[in-house]
Image (cartoon, rainbow, N blue to C red; front, top):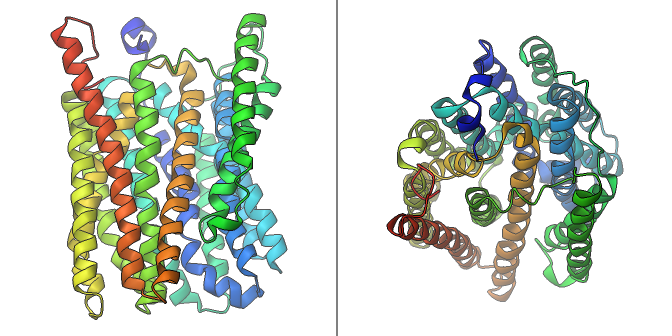
Length: 491
């Protein structure tokens, strides 16, 4: 049952909540931006550091891997040991590793630092969701999640543009270093603001809950064993260690058994499976995982196609992607305010719009394969796809967490974001395999490769749409039978 309904008298709005949210959004933007901004700088890193293809892959995938590894455990730590403490720790570590990455003398150091930077991002992200759960109630929470959804969409789409601008300004030789240096002043300012604006951690006099280290280790093994072959398969699926998937399944089975034992023994498992029995949360987590598999992979293949296939500069590539970011920013802000009124139907409309936008993008790319106006021609359909995406991320997160107590907001948010990271890895692996497979089979036909790659992204978004429609139909049937459902449409 939602905490909003059970104890409204216990909630006193924090007068600084919107300013506190702005600090969270800045930090969240930085951590998510570093997933995409590095991609356009890889050729410059390769030239400047003499990095191998494998090292370049680890610069990108290592960050994503450790990011996903610590999300659930850090969310639980925020819930139990203090959200501001974990936020500040993660932000300080992220800022420090950004400085070290910018000064990296060789690719080995850069790879190692990116692994630690991913951990820092994983410490940060669940706290943002937790703070939104703590600080906001009712329609305000939807608005706050709408702003966070805008940050997610914009950071993913605008990364290539910011990276391109930095490379154009600083030059190819050392311009890639500014991809990391730009985080330093922003991170430092956000740290000062965090101490001033974020609510202090509540000191409890009761017994501290155990951290469930065994559960954390088992879940970490399961996540890494699943994500590692996926991230390594982006360019060469045949060489990926797919046997680790079996290890992941075994670790997940052991994790479930361990958590059930922890629930019996001390009552404080890492993940309370009651969360997953909450229908709105289970549906939201599943839909988000599948949608992120399709949503994030489009930027991967489009960046490769525009830069390597059409010879665009990093800046030109980033400008092409800006249309998606603009569409996402506008509708994300609006959807947060409208989710309480329209609920799940709005997500279904958003998913259908993304499908149409990506499908038209594919058709336009095929029609302008050898045209100098390709980037301009796909701006319209990318704007449409972005507008649809803004109706998905924030509303889905709001509905997924609508019945989760705010005291479990960090853990619940960590599980959601872990699903998003795994979905991203699955999508990049599947789309990358098809893209590079067609590129090889066609003898270097980039137009053929991008067409097949986009078809996979459309298929993944279509699968998310099927989940959304199924949930909507099930909810309406439940209403017809008189079974109680939430007031937000599908959930």
